[in-house]
Amino acid sequence: MLLHDAFRVTIAVMKLLMLGGTRFLGRALVDDALARGWEVTVLHRGLTGAPPSTAEVLFADRTDQRAMVDALGDRRWDLVVDTWSGSPRVVAENARILRGRVDRYAYVSSVSAYRWGLHVDETSPVVAASATSDDNTDYASAKRGAELAVLESFPEALLARAGLILGPHEDIGRLPWWLRRIATGGRVVAPGAPTRPLQYVDVRDVASFVLSGLAAKISGAYDVISASGHATTSGLLEACVDATGSDAELVWIDEGRLAAAGAQPWTQLPCWVPQEGEFAGFLEADTTKAAQAGLQCRPVEDTVRDTWEWMQRETLPTQRADRAVHGLPSEIERELLAAEE
Ligand SMILES: NC(=O)c1ccc[n+]([C@@H]2O[C@H](COP(=O)([O-])OP(=O)(O)OC[C@H]3O[C@@H](n4cnc5c(N)ncnc54)[C@H](OP(=O)(O)O)[C@@H]3O)[C@@H](O)[C@H]2O)c1
Image 1 (cartoon, rainbow, N blue to C red):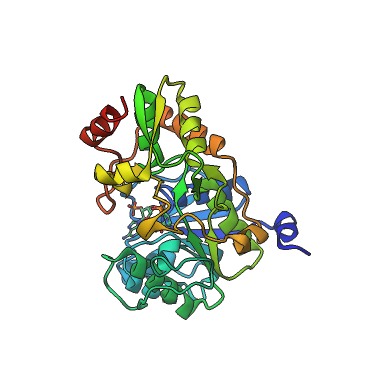
Image 2: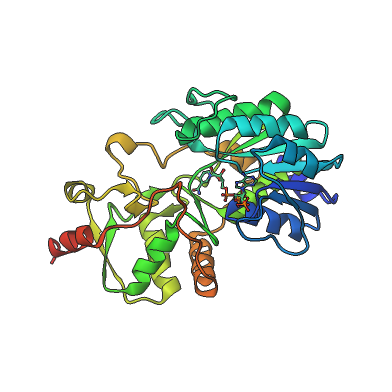
């Protein structure tokens, strides 16, 4: 039986413990699990939002192991999903406490765990890291260290190495920046070649993959990201124009002129990197393994439209202190557009 067939016949009601679950990806995981009719317990500090009322909530600070033991008590769950991006030591200590209380563990890691410039697929070399590290200043080694920390207690864990995640409730400000800028209208800097292949994944598609994968008992590392070229830069930006109903005119500016103006890929031009130079190969990973295991990626138009609808409906999350501010500074935009008059 193919794995995606196994996904479809998985109908058992699972008990899920969600570590986190109230910001972006965790929220999508909770929503998806509840929609499957699973029993969901969310563990967080209670500082960032609240899950739907149909989920049970346990309050604890994960850095305090006594508080974790007290909150978990002698309860048992089938599955746990962990979205932690702090220091690996916390994950190692939490996973030791969860051994015996939970059957299967999924850790949401990142393709950043691969050594810079060497990511091709799941067999590519990863960064050096330690499961006992207290350091979370280096994102790549914190994510890889957390993977090692989970594996110490759950050798059969699912390691979901997500790529760029977009969709409703995004709290980094990448797609929200493009949508806001394009909604404002007028001439908008559009980076590089319109046909440049992008690689990203909708947050709801990550959630679905992780939950179905856990239920189907897959383990090991999976790059959870669309095939390169699932969308292009023009596909993404034109979807923003359509979703917002804007009169924006996309002004395509080549890589050389963007670099000369000091426009930073990825942060100032969210979701985009040049095809040449230090980012070469960055949006071109081979994602066959996850696709064969059931990852399905919705069209870019759906991701963009649903994100815009969420932005119209709700107050946006505050800027995360642990992430860069995204978007093109207006003085660089003015300079680039003036040169195109
Ligand atoms: N965005 C991307 O493009 C991207 C790409 C690749 C991988 N990833 C990975 O995807 C994951 C995204 O996670 P997310 O932030 O969206 O997850 P989330 O589960 O929605 O939010 C983080 C949760 O952690 C809880 N929390 C924070 N500190 C805590 C503590 N000390 N004790 C207990 N709970 C705590 C927060 O609640 P309280 O504050 O109330 O405690 C919140 O519920 C991260 O692992 C990231 O590395 C993201």
